Length: 137
Image 1: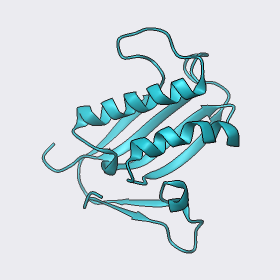
Image 2: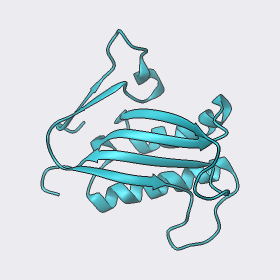
Image 3: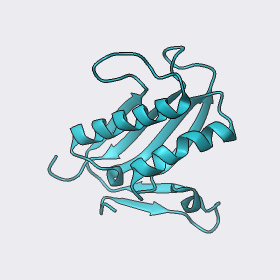
Image 4: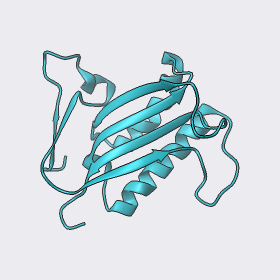
């Protein structure tokens, strides 16, 4: 874990670590990057996948690409917001394994938000991130 971030799951709150995220992320002073919501749009253009699973894979790929462009890793991510159309437990279970894999054990703070629609009627999920950039980037 980055020295610039501290993860907390105090015993007075539900243990989010069991689900792969943290209740609290404390960010030390430094440069922050606010990554716009990443959706299932291929970088070179093309069709948006129709299944939630395929969209989840592409959203995670795009989120990783954004972190790579920043010179950051999932361990630098303080906050993740997941916007999902028709948010249900089953759909979360379909999406979350790809996020957990992307987090690579980092356990950032996560908020899931159910929405009626996203920027395109084809999009089912969108992920935005706030990261503390590593020193020197």
